[in-house]
Length: 316
Image (cartoon, rainbow, N blue to C red; front, top):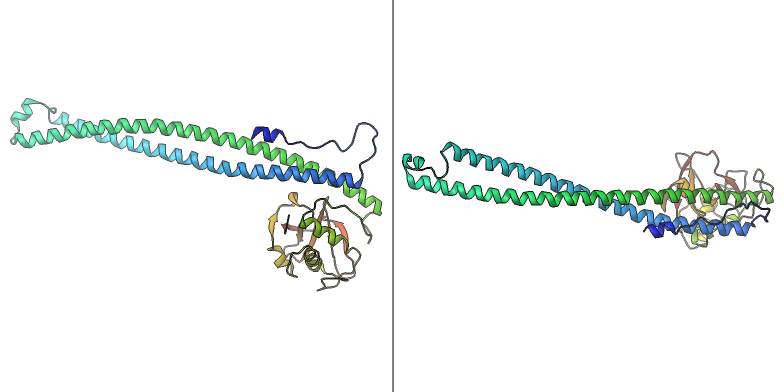
């Protein structure tokens, strides 16, 4: 596991100390794809270790309960053995001739003595067995705690590595989109922006399809091919890659897997406002393509300060 962890690399620096040519848009796209692959591998390792951590914690808790039960059993056996010893003392000892002579029923007395003696022997053996069980439970508890600590360390290391790659993804995507936007003259006005989308899966393909519809007018209730509303653009783009989605933001919200903002990938759906009344398609670099409102056109914009409600992954 440690070797696998150490094998993760972060790629070459984006900016050289010497005056080398700036990477092209395609170079930046390839770097982002490489980082996506790394973070996906790390995420799976992280998920696997989280499951192992749960198992280790369950084992530690079970060992703790076993030890607690053994301690309770031992205490009960010791108390019972003490009672037998006290009874023997009060009656003058198990083999006292005086007690036997003074007994009105010697046979009954001998039966009781024999029974008491047998119970004492049994208790002594049980106490010894519980003592051994406690020693075993102690070892199991210590082993389980050690395993739990080991897996916690692995989870922490993987989480740290994943955070570093997230930072590199943001930096590389930022460079990619900054270059694309500068070539297009910015996104302040309705301008077609040519941006290479990293990835070849259905989600990335849907994002690419959505970008081909830039500058087409917003029309409420429209789902292409010449006009769109926000959920209509999502429906149309995913339809192009063979995935059917409903034409309603509320239903699109429940159509996939919910993901955090820092884990967004190109093609993920991004929702805004508490009632989820607006949706766009994330394309990377903190940007999305969407159909904004009546009087506007399909365009690329930053996620910005809109009240972000969440992300949904429809496909890989």
